[in-house]
Length: 503
Image 1 (cartoon, helix red, strand yellow):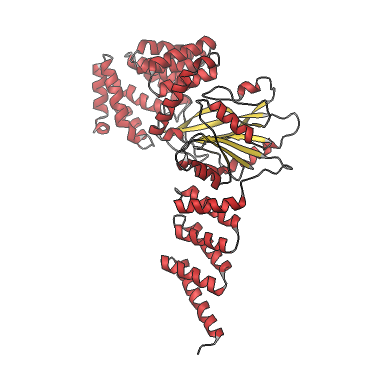
Image 2 (cartoon, rainbow, N blue to C red):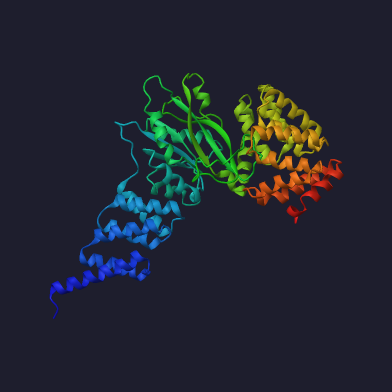
């Protein structure tokens, strides 16, 4: 009969052998289960926890390693560690129903996140509906920055609310009433932090920027009560106003071809008189008109909603319909009319976009962005003379606006002045070398002028960029426009120059 010490030695040897196989990557699912059982029998759960913690981080897609790590944490009574592991797992993949339910059971024991009343605290305020695919990565990323999460569910039919609870959010139901400001203000009413941060489920802030936000919140008496933040709206096109190419500064957060900016107040002190206004395209800025100290926060928000074209179009249709219905309530607010005009263009409702941009110009006659967009809308409707005229006005107001110069060149191109178009595009690119749309149109202009070698060289460089797959469609579109505008010879030159791209 073997002695107890011999049995213990044999069990220890088995544990060592199983661990080696797992560390070498030669172990199977059965090996991992046997190792867990052996560690439990030998009273070496802490050792097994360290191993499975290492393996789950090394093999992020291996649910079994994460599951066994979580099981050991629970066996040791360490709910916070188990909860953190479940959150990390949920953020990296669509959480299985069982995992979500297990996590919610742990979260009920731990309770939601609570701000420390003695410290400078930040409440994240969100409204969401059917955002389950995006919400977990968003909350996982922002959670280290904030002290409280307020999530307002406006009628989800998926597990949005449960995912919010999983991450420690205080979730409140809100009966939707076609009023985004009302939903946002309901969120503010539930917050208890000293500061408010407003995000949506398809947005993130880079961890490297957290310290900057904390510094801003620690500002003393007389410091800003609100900060505007620029949103980087990532997209698959390069023709949006203000578009910028991804430059690698936020390499792990960049997406699409590049981004276009928008800026509004997102970070502000929690005060009862600071509330959102307007039922759609809601903003707190009207509450801050009498506040002298509104500053700029240089931390960007990374927004990915425009990358899902189908979802973005559906969202735009809903926003647009609601905005149009509430237009009279926003009749004299330039920002609200601008948002509605932008969405009219996004939905390709060009005639309505023209009316809205002209309405905005009646309020702000010197606004070059409206002129640029009027030029673009007329161009889309093949009214090239009107497009050229609005582009001229935009350039006169702001010669540095690259989109104004681009539209001016485009107008000359479609009116048949290829030499002038080439010259303007060359100047635009001298100032903005990364402007893909201008480079593409310069290539077209050179083809129209029979400078095929230069035209093809530019197009080949574009073919090596992220825009490469879109070039055949873009070439065919401008070729057809040239022909429809009466420039048959130019259309033939474009086809001849880029025949290799059109195959």
